[in-house]
Length: 270
Image (cartoon, rainbow, N blue to C red; front, side, top):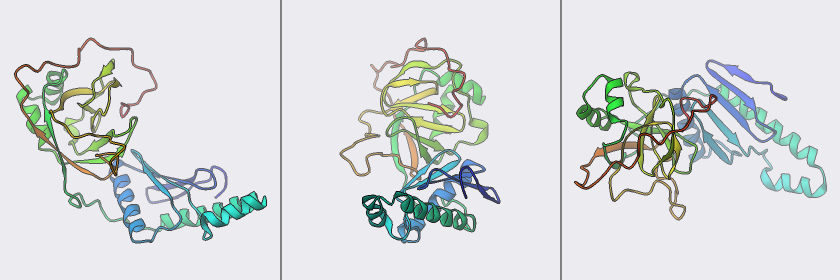
């Protein structure tokens, strides 16, 4: 397994990402979530030695910091003695052993009932609510029920600290990103794009369809003083609970605050 060589077997492709990391590619989001859950289970019971970081994506999982049996201490001695090539060779050998091992795993289907769901109160009054209702072929008053009855799960985290990409909506409720993104989406906005639901943890540009916002008071999606800092980490189950808006509440996002869409941005972008 050298350079860009890859190992493949039955819907899984493993590529080297430097001497200390592997990138695992899977065929779809469901298999990716199941594979990530299996990695976490094995690490918890000590059956995944030498991997310091596991980073899931939409259809990939990155395993970083892969070490040989000597671990960091062995690598550190090699660096101090100037024998950097020996350290890299051992790390690459450990990486390649793990790559071959991953192909032999039997990964059980994802069990979505593993953890209690995080309940998040939201007000369904977003500026794109009517457009989403039209895309779904339902009345505006039906959108909150359809969305809140969905069992969501965080597949992976994305462009901003605390932003989770939530899966669970059936395919018939998937919606495209806006033709032009907004220059500013407020913190707490509840949004849809493609198969994903997300909540903006802080103000930022964004092209997702906004159907609501976090109710006040709302849980902090990202708190660096909390452990873990992200409320919605990969694998977390999420349930949105409809809440009523105060009478004086006004829509926080002007529909005209838009900017051209970069051609390269994908459907799963922010």
